[in-house]
Image (cartoon, rainbow, N blue to C red):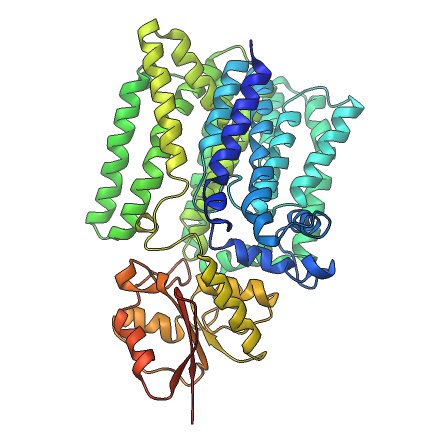
Length: 563
């Protein structure tokens, strides 16, 4: 393709720009959970020594520490500018993976454009300072190497091992998806070889990758970071019933079997794949209809409906028609079995796991975390879908397709940083004054004194204290959630101030919690978020025995006297 390198450079610039918009504008990292993540290395940024566990893999944490210690860059600048710029490199392996999978440079460029503009709200694809971004970066390189056949080449083998270890050292869930994907590729190959009466060498060559990576992952999840992987699995199984496990297993197996059938029949047809613009309109209408039905029957509140409409519909309208069109073309094309199996296996792994999780009670909400890797792994198919639409269209329709692509990119990029009205009242960004008062709170309170605040402000307390703080509403951990709400959460849920529990010594209130400001008290994700009535703040300011210790203009710190 002409201008190949120039196209990649433009895509990389776009990827960096999208991910730097919020951080560069306010000088602070975007994403309220960033400080929870980086609080694990707050002390290491000054001492060079890790004092807390790193459940999601040490590589990102170590990288951030080196940037701060050796680079002399402030932690906030590192998290808001340097790290997002580096993590935006995820588009490079996405382009390489697409190019080597479908052997089409134009499709690879389109896939890169979509990857550069797609930013998911939770666990963003390269958007915020989270381990998943680095994990997907290494996983992308792994996929681009895994799809090749020349594994006997020593250089390829070394690079493949490096990419696998990088994924393992970066993010647990991405590692699980990669392992599951390799397992499905092996299954596809065994089924194919079974029809021929013998197992070919490709399956045997995959085992030296699959078995060591799987064993290493199990050892790390068991002895180093159990709370984010194996314990979550155990809690999911404990909350499930035999029926939900059976139904979830059936649908997960159904997804795998349908993908396998599509690959080896080498025949796929779908009427709307030939009518992409009509397909997009139908997808848009269907997305709205499904969400509205859920809302009308009481399965979804207005706040959640608004958020999914804003975020989910643009992603569906862009990815569903293009990926289905690309899938039909790819299956019917002359692409070799190995490339097709690899292309299908990793999205199938994500969809299968998501289907299983969504049917489980409690931790079934974890299914949404499969979306990032699913969209990333299907980029080659999505790219070839739009490439074929453009190639088959008349010159006039090509201009329309180019306009649609440009509009889609803008729509996807705009969903990356919505206002809090589209996030159930949740503000993803902090004001500098929020950071100042959090640091004051950590400095003036003694260890063990209980502070009532929400998850959003609690993340700042964890960050400044190096996770050595006792805040009552700390529900950030799967295995030891705190009491739901304490005073702030209970007052928000009641709609009026309630008596302050005896276990609360300090209360940290932010304007981002107040009803008049469109905010919410951020509680555990599985519970509904409620706004704090303004009367609750007046209650704290006027009630005898409660004194305001600090006021930053956007947040207020109160001391509750028991005398």
